[in-house]
Image 1: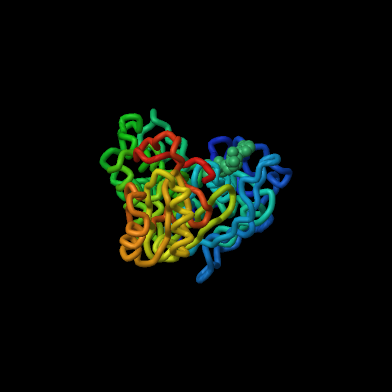
Image 2: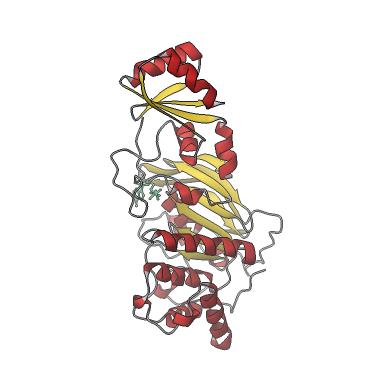
Length: 376
Ligand code: ADP
C-alpha cells in the first residue's frame, strides 16, 4: 500500500493556499455549482479498503456548462494497476472528465470515487491518493529539478531526510538524478515532462492522472514517457489514467473508454474493441461512391457506407470479397484497400463518423489530422 507522509492534505494547486485537509475545493477556471463548496465529510479520512474493488468508479456522470452538455451519463471503472485511456476527439468531454476526477470541478450529477473516497464529499482525502499531471507546465523553470520537488514535497507535508531520500528516489526513477542541481529551464521538453511526472508521483499516489501528457513532445520523448507509465504500472502498481486523442497512444493502454460528444461510446481493451468489428475493413474509391455503395448493398447484402468520398465495408474475409466486388463492377473502382480494423474503425463503427476530420490542421507531433467533430 502506498505510504502517506504527514497529516496535511495536498490540494491540487496547493501553492494557492496552505495545505489543509478539509477545506473547499479550489475551483480553477470554471464557474461551479454551489456543491463546489462541499467539504470532506469523512472524519477522519478512512483507509482505502479497496482490495478487489475498482480503484476508480465513475457512475452516471453528467456535466453541463450552461446549456451545453459536456458529459452525458458516463460510467466506467478502473482497476488497480491498470493503464487506462480516455480517448476522444476534441470536444468529446475528456478535459471535463479529467477535472472532475482530479476534484477541480464538481459534476452536475453522478458520482466519482477514487480509492474509496467520493470526489465531491471527500475531495481532501481523495487527493492524497492521486497524482496529477496537467497539460500546462507546473514546474518552475527558474528552480532546479531538486528545488521544484522540494517545494512540491512541502505541499504534501514531506520534510527533512525523508523528503531528500524520496526526491533522489524519484529523480532516479525518471532518469534525471544527475541533473537534479540544474535549472529546469535548461531541460528539453521531454525532461521537463519527466519532472512534472516526478512531482505527481512524489507522495506515492495509487492513481496517476495525466492530461494529454505527450503534447509537444518529440517521438523519442513520447516513447520514453509511455515506457515510464508502463513501469509505474508494473513495478509500483500505480493505476494510470491518461487522456489522449492519439490512436497510437490509446493502443498502448490496457483498457480504454472512448468518448464522443460527452457519451461513452466504447469501453474495453483495444484488442477486444477492434475484434468486435470482426473481419476486415475495405475502402473503395470510385467516381460516384454513393451509387457504387447502393449497388454493392443491393447485390451483396453487405453494409456499404460512404465516408469522405470512399465506400466503406466491414466484412469477414475481405480478401475473398475483393475479387467478387471488382468483377461485379468492372471499371468503376479506382482503388481499393483491405485492412484489419483499428481503433479509428471502432470509433466509426460506434458513432457513424470519423475521428479525424479532413479539413483539420495536422496535429503537431504526428502529422495526423487533429480530431474534430464532423458528421459524415
Ligand atoms: P475535450 O477535452 O475532449 O476536448 P472538453 O471537456 O474540453 O472536451 O469539452 C467538452 C464540451 O464542453 C465541448 O463542447 C466544449 O466546447 C464544452 N466546454 C468545455 N469547457 C467549457 C466551458 N468552460 N464553458 C462552456 N462550455 C465548455
